[in-house]
Image (cartoon, rainbow, N blue to C red; front, side, top):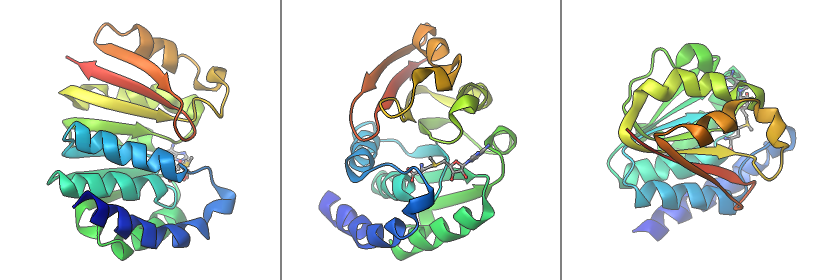
Length: 188
Ligand SMILES: C[S@@+](CC[C@H](N)C(=O)[O-])C[C@H]1O[C@@H](n2cnc3c(N)ncnc32)[C@H](O)[C@@H]1O
């Protein structure tokens, strides 16, 4: 059953890659890690900040479908929202994706938790602002994955990484898969 979902993503991946030249996207192993994590924790309500062309969102949406849930994904660029929407539909995932267009700092005020899983992958310098906007929307147990820990200097994330690593409700470590994820487990 899981392989069927992976095949559906594989068919759309080439279309995504046509648009990859102007964007940083998760590579295939990073996407598979997101898919596997979401399945493992049974995430039903998943949030993504930074849809771009849908590379990561395809994996998150496929896992949401397996888990009987949905993906809410936000991007500030209307052109990317339109193109990624086509990719979600091509993969048969349009029905489980709620796409929102606008700056995440604003849109997060309108989306409904509680979220079991969050993927943070937009402007690195704004990561703390995103976190502050979704912290109160986390489920009692949740996993937060943040991209680009091995491709970008940690200083780019400002106070975000020290904040989540020192939060008494969180355990956080860097996992060197794909572009490197900060893998953070939240328990209220
Ligand atoms: C690195 S890309 C996301 C890649 C995507 N997660 C993937 O792996 O396929 C970052 C995206 O964040 C979007 N973005 C930039 N500022 C944003 C903001 N304030 N709110 C939401 N999205 C934003 C950009 O338009 C861009 O598409």
